[in-house]
Image (cartoon, rainbow, N blue to C red; front, top):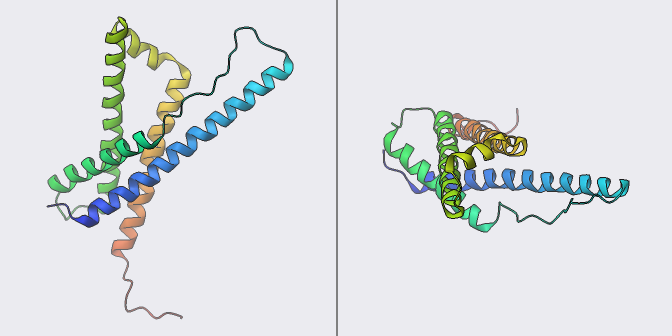
Length: 171
């Protein structure tokens, strides 16, 4: 089936909601890191513990890339899935494709960084997998992307199957 403007509009709304959830998680995580830093500094200065304001990952550039992933995933799935399928399943599948797209993008970034710095790509992959903060951030991001898509799929499924006309306003 060919994608329509409605599909792309829903993909933009879904991508925006997903981006908002991910950016909110990042801000909350940075807030707690900052609180931990101030608690540590109250106990006494730690030598070698430098807290610098990190560069935010979820900014306008990643928002545009995130929306592009949602649009491409919607285009691919709408093109190759039949219309008879569940709308809920469609939006969960979009979320899975977006998560795969982010995994591929981050893998390409790790390999590019490893080759540019002269390190082994395998070493850089293992380094990014072994650290607990990377594991936590990756799993929470995956859960947020899939969770937002499950909620979005459920809402769109209910909205498309519910009869909005012909019901009495007050019973």
